[in-house]
Length: 120
Image (cartoon, rainbow, N blue to C red; front, side):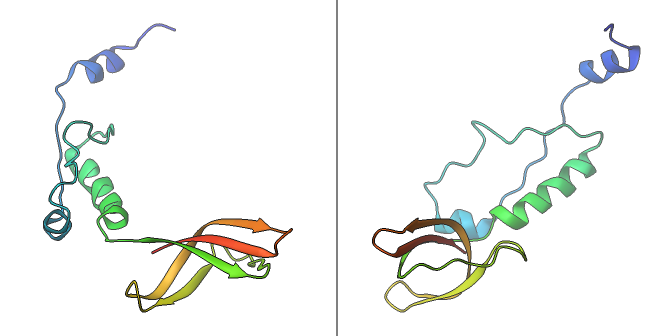
């Protein structure tokens, strides 16, 4: 399939780099990779479109979240019909008290144990 003139012009234009960072996250994780060595690639027609997409991504990624492995005595089958289950985890030792998404569930039917990975 031959390239159209519009495709060639689009491929030859200079890239516009759009960056975003969260100062609070950067202060907590000072040694974390800043993403400059392998930035997230996206192709947009304008810098404002790229900024809007990056702001949406930052809303998800720029929040301090933690993961917990939780073992439940007994088999627990969460209702998945309404989406990803959200459970409240209360753990005073790890200072966790709030809603967490269930990221992974493992059932051990032989020992009747449910293991979940909670993220939030």
